[in-house]
Length: 398
Image (cartoon, rainbow, N blue to C red; front, side, top):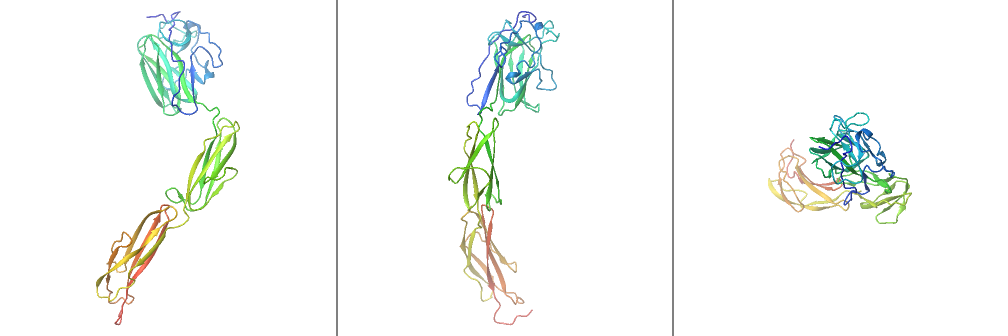
């Protein structure tokens, strides 16, 4: 077993540079190789633990802090930055983050340099990679979101050749990571790589808010007022432009009125003071100000004689909508006696109505036929026609 207390410091090599392919827009990789600070100052690391202290904020310029546990139930901050030879191959530069369970290996403070080690990022990341190597056992890298909930985890066997250990999220929500060792003799970590969102030279982002009488299926039932608000993460919004239905671009200064039945396209974008233009956005604004048109005719409007026969009546007509379009239609046949009420499903259908009147019904018998059309905006139009079975030929007695 190597001597982790003195000059036998582990040596390893890592990835050094992370190549981004197919990643999120405005993403930037950051590499902490323990050989230099963020401003380029070289780090003169000692070759034994007792000449240094556990690393904490020495590399804060990169946006990372050490000794912060990703899991509140576990201790963290056991590693020290060392240099030299430790029997592990393949790391970059001369410095690395070293750990040792050997009781003889202690820092200046007398603390034993054992894991786990925690890393806290100033900006949430979506990928974290750490090169690990050592003698026996395993290393587990776990990522946590800002609330402390686990996001991802990966485990790797420790060998004398450094290999990458990586966790990744589907979004930029990794706030902390922790590397923990099990059944190990000694370990090193090198080239901490993390990918964060780069908010430098990011164009503005414009949002549109629409207000108006709301119908169904995304339709408005009248005029719409559209308001634009632009924000810029890394600077100041210079101006916002808009145009309606392919017209000329106009500077935005106040909410715009969008009117008229039909589908309108509102386009807009903004530019910041550095000249970075936002990609053009487009909102579809659908307006339907008119109800459907319904025509309804019956082939008979009265039945005679009242001899109890079933008389055919054709239900004719049509329904249309020039705005959002028809969504459907329904029919209703209602007998005031509640006896003969055939179903109607379409125009042109023939129904049978009974030509009879009750003896004491001096006003005659009424059938109501109604057609109702509904457009896609949720507006309805109904038309009603009547069929009368009159009483003729003899006196009515109540």
